[in-house]
Image (cartoon, rainbow, N blue to C red; front, side):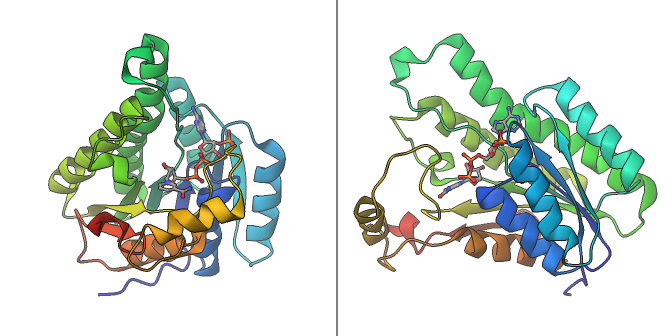
Length: 249
Ligand SMILES: NC(=O)c1ccc[n+]([C@@H]2O[C@H](COP(=O)([O-])OP(=O)(O)OC[C@H]3O[C@@H](n4cnc5c(N)ncnc54)[C@H](OP(=O)(O)O)[C@@H]3O)[C@@H](O)[C@H]2O)c1
């Protein structure tokens, strides 16, 4: 059955800009109130909150480091104080470090695993508790992966391991948290040039050519998949590729 998301509450991590922002805006368009989490992009988060509120739903932002318990507690304290409930958690915040395997320091490893896997794990635990506390309709958790979860990316070894772990966290949480909490994932393909990458439009177009659909996608494509996984209430443990078929080649 398709659930009407209107009036629900969502937490989107890493939502100040880029893919996380598109997800937050798409949910807001469907009437969802949003907590915009951000790490360092305060001005962008303020602008995202303004855009969400202009759609007639409530929103506020919170700054926190998602890679550890203190930051996750900050987010959920703010959430409990402001909205007092939660229906949708989207774990989108992530880092993306390029390193050769033998050059990954222990600090690199811990930063990546903590941001991309431990943070979503802690958010999953806190979200499940809050979802069950105050809203009998339960909730849904959506993890944002990438293809590095399913195949080795030798240029991003610790990143690949972190997303593979997040893929399994999705499966094991889906198996554990029913019947009231569903857990799904989206695997975006090339939808935005990597943050900070100095990639020309021509280079980016070539990335799109490496997919069966021969083009890059958009953050909005990912956002609509998240909204779909949020509203279809017989989906749990589902993983949707939003990548122009990139995984087939
Ligand atoms: N872009 C793509 O084409 C693509 C493709 C496949 C998968 N994905 C996945 O989609 C998601 C979003 O992608 P994106 O390209 O929009 O990501 P991004 O810009 O690289 O990063 C998302 C956000 O994560 C936040 N973040 C990182 N480390 C953090 C920490 N320790 N604490 C708090 N916040 C932290 C940053 O927030 P601040 O800026 O506020 O610091 C950043 O804006 C990611 O999970 C990514 O792996 C993206």
